[in-house]
Length: 303
Image (cartoon, rainbow, N blue to C red; front, side):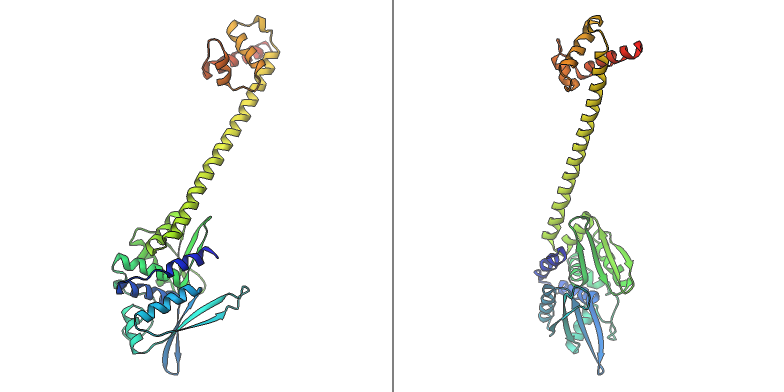
C-alpha cells in the first residue's frame, strides 16, 4: 500500500462526535470530489473516491446525518485500471437541507465553489475540513522528499483550503492545473502539521521518524567525509615530513627537532597528537606540528 492509502485508512477511522465537525468534513468531501448531474429535471450528485475506506467513511457520515447513498465501483480507463468508488446521492429535500447547511449548495440550490466561513469557524472544524479534503482528493508521497496535494475543483476552492490551514499557522501553496486546482505543501514540517491537524497522528509520526533518521544519516555522512578528508590530509603531510627527514642528517639537528624527526621515522602513520604523546617530555599537538614544520623548512632552505 502507498502512503496515501495508509493516510486515507487512518483518517477514515476518525468519527467526530460534534455535528459541526461532521458538516465540515462532509463539506470538504463534496467540494473535493463531488460531481453534479441533472437527470430528468432532478439534481443528483456523486462523490468519486480513490479508496474503499474513504467511500465507507463518506457513506457512514451521510447515514449518520440522515441522508441515504449508494456505493458503486468502476475501473479507471488509465493504464493502471485502478478501482474507483462512487457514492451516489439523490438530492431529495432532506439531502438538500443538509448540503445547504454544510455549505455545499447555496440557498438557491446551486453548487458553491467554496463554503461559507461559518463551516470552519472552530479549530476542530478546520481539522475536520482538512480531513475531508484529504479523504476526498488528497495525495501524499514520501516519506523521502514528501509532497502533499489537496485537490479542489477550482482555484477558489484551493484557496479556501489554504486559508483553513493558514488559520492554524500552516502555509500551503495554491496552484492551478489544467482541469483542477490544488493546495500543496512540501517538506516534513508543513506536511506533518497538516496531518496532525487532520488527526492523522500515525502518518505524521512516520514522516517525522523518517525526517529524524535522514538528518542523522546526513550528519553521519558529513562526519565520515570529514574524517576521510582529515585522514587524507594527515597522510599527505606525513609523507612530506618523511621525505624531508630522510634528506637530513639527524645528528646535525637540534635535540628537539631530532627527537620529533626520529619519532616520525619510527611511526610514519601516527597523528601529531600521538607523536607528541611519545615525546619526552610529552608535547601538545601544536608543539609537535611546529617542530615538524621546522624540519620541513630546513630542507626547503637547503634547496
